[in-house]
Amino acid sequence: MAGEAEDVLEPGGCFKVVLPHGGQDHVPPQHSAEYGTLMRTVLAPAQQPLEGLGSLSHSVVAVILQHLQGAGGGAATRDVVHLAFSSRALFEAVAAAEPLWQQQCHRLGWSLEWLATLPPGTSSWRYFCGRMALRRRLRCQLSSLARFLDPLSAAAIQRPAAVEQIREVERALQAPLPWELFELYRWCDGQAAERGGVHFLHAARLLSLRELLAAVQERHGPLQTKAAFAQLVRQQSSAHGGSSSAALQPGSSRQAGGWAGEDDAPGCSCSPHAPQGAAAVPQVLLPFTEELRGRKWYCLDTSGRVWLTSGFNTLPVADNLSACILRVLT
Image (tube, rainbow, N blue to C red):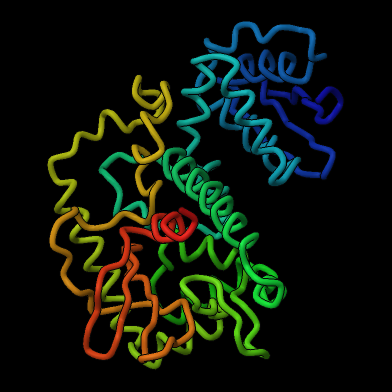
């Protein structure tokens, strides 16, 4: 990292940071001494130990993280996380850098509207970690399932949909896509329909993003999808009404120790869904497979549960897409 940035002390005791890509920022005079110490430490040769970082304020560390992110793009996220695990104090500072993780979520296309469905006090850092864990697990499962497809079905898998394409669909629906549905389309934009006999899940072909939008709009209007998401937010707010936010704050002992398990991360298994029990048939369903014989579709509701619709019957299949795929694999 040495030589990647230059810090200049201007008159008045204010540091100006000049980065190779031309960006620059200023650090208030009251933090200049701390900032200078951190820049000399972080930009020093790798063999120099990270000393004295625990005494720096979170706001100063946040400035460094923002510059690291701006200089390296997506690859710099790994550097930020590695830096966080060098000490407990730095971990707390990284977890508390809300603008950094909100920026990361926006870059990946993850709507921050989902924070309203999570327990009170859930930080952008925990939201980012939960969605990244889900993304990794679901992509592994999808890749495993693709290896069992026949050559025709495997060749029909299309390139991933771009983040902006998914955002256009979300704007049309006036609601964010469920977490796993979003990641499904970031893995592939469905399967081509030029030939018959193509299948992916339970002999059903995956719809492309454009086909999904058309199928949803045929069933529901944007006001219905918007109302369905608003209802989910109200349900989750009610369910988390008694939750304590202290355990979810950045730097808490629970967070610093990591997740208790993958399912402990809010929304890690799927988008946050209603408490378990007798599931009421949802008013809004998002079909993601082609129509099967007997007018059957596999759909997700706004909370991420998988349903099978057939005429006037709607039956629950799995709590989330990951569980549905796991059943196919096993």
